[in-house]
Length: 81
Image (cartoon, rainbow, N blue to C red; front, side):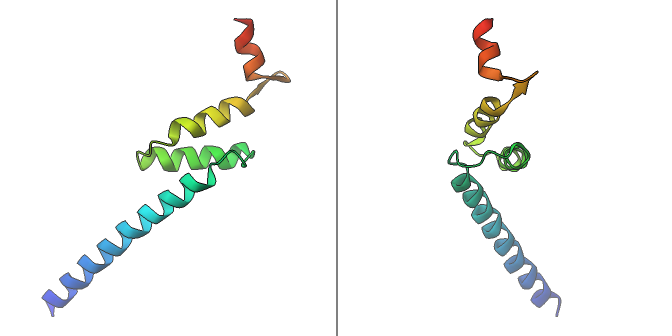
């Protein structure tokens, strides 16, 4: 009975890992630049950072492009300096 439970746990672990990889791929595919909701991009960047995805930098660039300080785009402020 114990060995059956152990085999079941191993199968569940493999299933979880597969689902994590699929979730990461889904999030990476969604970050094509079409998302303009900063909250969604923050959550996506956090999830991708936890997964150590190479796409995190791209998401952070998208967030920087959407950042506003006192009504100005962040890119306008960076040009001033």
